[in-house]
Image 1 (cartoon, protein in one colour):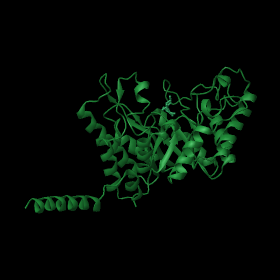
Image 2 (spheres, protein in one colour; image 1 turned 180 degrees about the vertical axis):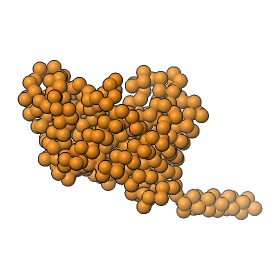
Image 3 (cartoon, rainbow, N blue to C red; image 1 turned 180 degrees about the horizontal axis):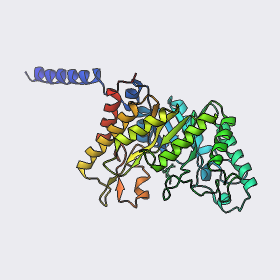
Image 4 (cartoon, protein in one colour; image 1 turned 30 degrees about the vertical axis):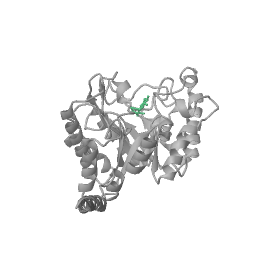
Length: 358
Ligand code: XIL
């Protein structure tokens, strides 16, 4: 009798396991295959040696982007020296796991090395250095990095619609400071010369809705397209801290940019939540966060030209939001600190599975 009972229990368990194995839940990466979307994340190479980090990354994403490893201060640490070791690790990981690699970023006002910012170079010298930097870095990854954020955050926060003052534009700039966005155009042309196959993106913060900043970028991209400047896409960073974003405006904005014939990538999405001193969010905010991930993913999926959704990291264990907000915000990503999927994960996957795009 005892024996029969234990066989029954065993058999029931086996059936249950068998059943759940027969209908496995899809990973994000598998769900993204249906609509043919790139689903990516920013990564830091030191963490690739952590088993849970690496296995989650390879299972869930089909695209990666170095979070910092291609910024000037890392890849170009001395005037005559390029250090590709960190970014190469990421590219190798991507190759082994069949993932695409986005490059970030060739021209930015932040995370530049001291030798550059303190070097008191002339405009001619800066122009030569920038051309060499773009061509060396893009050339090193020709055929390996399929898309580049050529220029990042060139427009000002405080004076919406105006170009930011930077070492590349006008301090002292590369010699085109009086010609509006001509310095941006020059960077795109250099990148194109280094790899005509790569998709070239302009990437920006706080331009995901229709606002004065996105209006100015729109005018720039339209002008570039009309004049044959090689630009293929616009990246909207999508760092969200307001739990009631205007998704209708985000969707309308994606619509107007893709109508210009450029692709849109969501490049740095996270949804920062208020957290207590232990880093824990309010449970009800996790659901609001999930809704935001779902709605923005659906907005992207509803426009065929929106071809990638990328999060800025994937586990709350490693996210720039903590230090950026002095630890008042966090829990911004689809996986918690122990790599457990959060409601935001299920919402993202649901949006991918429900998309009618094929
Ligand atoms: C952030 C990284 O996540 C941090 O590790 C680094 O310390 C600072 O930069 N917009 C961008 C990204 O385009 O490059 C920034 O990344 C976040 C804001």
